[in-house]
Image (spheres, rainbow, N blue to C red):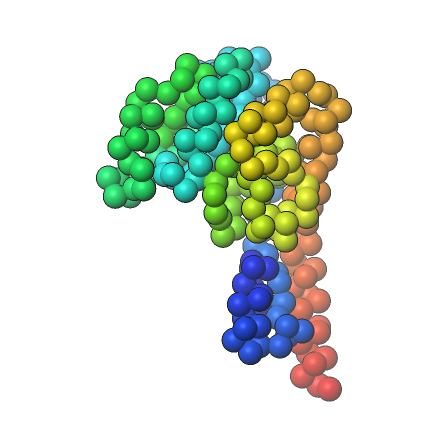
Length: 232
């Protein structure tokens, strides 16, 4: 059993029969990551100094070059009327890739860009409730749980066009390869109500696939199939 479909080809190369490999992902609790009331969301924005009417683009992860933090800020510069918020810090201190440049950027961000530092996981639900869009410009990922947490609240996704996402998100997201495209996608979500609602439905589809109920169904099918194979 693998939790990431990208592992399947590697296992086949080791000689394992593809038919004997099962993809069963992790899931994110809907009890921990859920949509809060309008009053609670307003209080969250006040806590973080974000205007109650702002269109908020959230990024999350360690502050390092690989995570696309420079791109996040450059897109923010193109969109001064949109609020950008990054949750995450320098988990590895000065040995972080691009530390010096990123440290300066974190200390002197554009006016419409906030760096919150490291946020405890149990508080991330508040940031998803504050966000209108989750923007993940990371250059490589394994299986970003941030995405699975955000889609529980049906937050639209703008992601870098990575091969990994094709197998795990089923094209239910907006994708780009450069900052101009990212900015245009976010602008479209900001301006077009119908597009925004469709993006919410796409996130809901991802959330449904990675729900506890669906993952449990996959485990049941695995055990039944394994039992049948054993008794052939």
